[in-house]
Image (cartoon, rainbow, N blue to C red; front, side, top):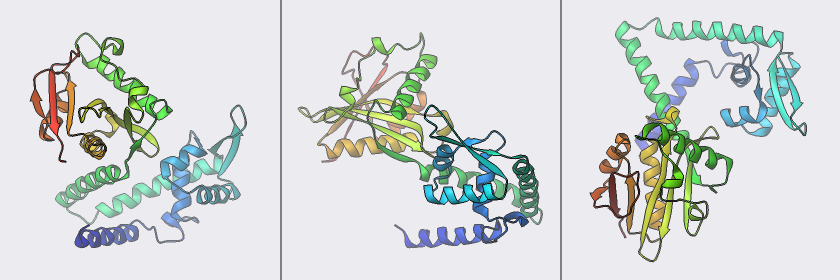
Length: 296
C-alpha cells in the first residue's frame, strides 16, 4: 500500500473529525457525544430493530448496548422486546427523544450552512461534489464479498432479484425454468460457488461460478448488482473476485453468455478482457458469448 496515500487519508480523517465536532463531549452543543447523537438520529421517528441498528452502523454489540442504555437513562428512547419468542428488540423515540431529534436536525442544518458560508459559490460546488464522490468511494470500500450457500436468505434475496430484473428487461420476459440451470447443488463446493456482496449487512450483489475441473473451465452465472449500489464499481469487483476464486481452483478459461438487453454488462465484460466467441451452449436467452483466459 502506498505510504503517501495512507498519510493523506489520515490527514483527511483528522480534518473531518475536528470540523464536524466529533472530538467534543457535547456534539452540536448538546449534552451527549457524537455516538449517542448518531444513534438517536438513526433510530428516527419510526423506530428501528436493535439488530438492524447494529448492522447499519457496524457497531460492536457491547458498545451499542451502552449507547442504548445511556439514551434510555436520559428518557430519550425505550427499547421493547417483541417477536414470536420475545427476542426481537426495537428501539423507539419517546416524546422527549423526538424533540431532541428535531433539535439535532435543526442544528445539523446550521452546522452544514456554517461550513459552506465562508466559501465562494464555486468552492461550495467543488466541496459538495467532492463530498458526494468521497461518500461513493467510502461506500465501495465498505462492501464485503464472500462465498455463501445459495440457500442462505441473503443469497436467495440476490437470486430472486436477479430473476425479477431479467424478467423486466428481456424482450418477452425471463423464465428461469427455460434457461440453462444453475441449481443450488451446482453453486455449492466443489461443483461451484456463489459470491454475495453485502453493504451494512444487506445483500447488494452476487455472481456465481459453475466449475468444470475436467476441462479447466468455469462458467460465470447470475451476475447481479442492486440498483442502489450501482456506480460503486461493484460489478467489476464481483467479476474480479470470481476470476480470483476460479484461478485458485485451476480454471484457465472462464466463460459466460449474456442477453443483448444487458448493455452495461456487455461493456463491463469487454473492458475486463473478455473476448466474444461463437456460441458454446444453447442458452435460449443469450445473444453474446464471451470467454477469458486466466493466467496460470
